[in-house]
Amino acid sequence: MTAASSHTGRLLVAAPVLTDPNFARSVVLLLDHDAQGALGVVLNRPTPVAVNDVLDGWAQLAGAPSVVFQGGPVGLDSALAVAVIPGEPGPEDPLGWRRVHGAIGLVDLEAPPQVLAGELGGLRVFAGYSGWTPGQLEAEIAEGAWYLVDAEPGDISCLRPELLWRAVLRRQRGALAMLATYPEDPTLN
Image (cartoon, rainbow, N blue to C red; front, top):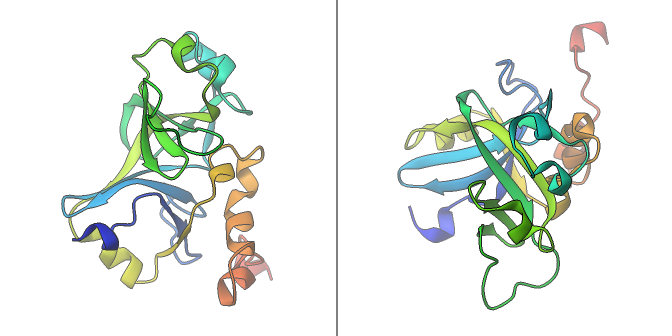
């Protein structure tokens, strides 16, 4: 896989046919995609657990809602964080933040939150992640389970995550935009 064929930094939007409860109507940010597989986090699965309940000092940097999100079914006992650095990229990334794509990056939760306090916008904390073995994601996309679309920095800090699936589809062109109106249960239509 070449860097040009990597989907790192893009979104996977679950097609209506994807009914697996882990991914139905999910929007996944791909944090890594290469020949070894893919890794991402589900952006629209907030939990009732407050960030402050599990990570001291990070709650004041977390965007609303300040809760932990379920990033996927893998590694639910681990946490990772994603944030946006507003503005144009500088010559060096801030200490404790690693650029994934554009303004989006991973936050080192071992770093003191004060180090990044003035730098970050839209911090999200995730319990677990979504992972695919080599070729698995490509096969799922080819089968029509996922739509691959461009991410926008605001997707990470969406104030109403329950509306993100529809919002991402609505901003696409053509037939994908029409899917934003797809009913949750088509048998009731």
